[in-house]
Image (cartoon, rainbow, N blue to C red; front, side):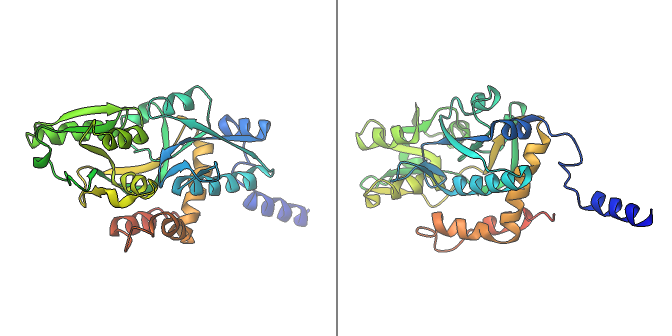
Length: 285
């Protein structure tokens, strides 16, 4: 009897939290279907974009790959990974309409957005900045008087840009575009004079353009943009599985390898804020 009791207690201690309760929500859906659907932005380098192979790649995609590995361990089965392109406008509705299971890209975590979706632990920190052609070098707001500035609709950068234009009394026209690709195209065609987005995205756009020397990017930022992966609200088990994978990347410092892979070519050194982020995110198991 004593040995049976000891065995029971041993099992109770080491059983996984998910095994000790009934699985539900997104985890149960993924287990039943054998598939996880990852939403991603097609033109948000270096966070998520379509690579030369035609497959989704990027910093956030690598983090989501680690989450898939965590889920396969948790569920004890291999999973089919399906990538679903989304836009700035439909990314959250795609989650809530069950078209995707997680949003992997360059999404800023805000309290307002948490009324619609939920978020994982932070995955990156950046801020909104300005890009122009190097020939004009319109990289501060006084230089934008009388100019047109593009920004992607449905992003936090829209409001941040409007606020700083008003605060600095800049006489600039804000032109909303559907995507970062369209913004760069409009600037190349001379329809807008500058383009605003998260600084890391601007750098990625320049590097992936084939001729980055044509562009100039401001060294400063005018907003705080904490990135995270979006999931459905009230789905604690799935969010916990994703957070567990992210925390593990921080604890074993694999996040530094991912950073170097996607940012190392243009970042001489990691921003101190990023190092603080991954140290704070290394939540113990």
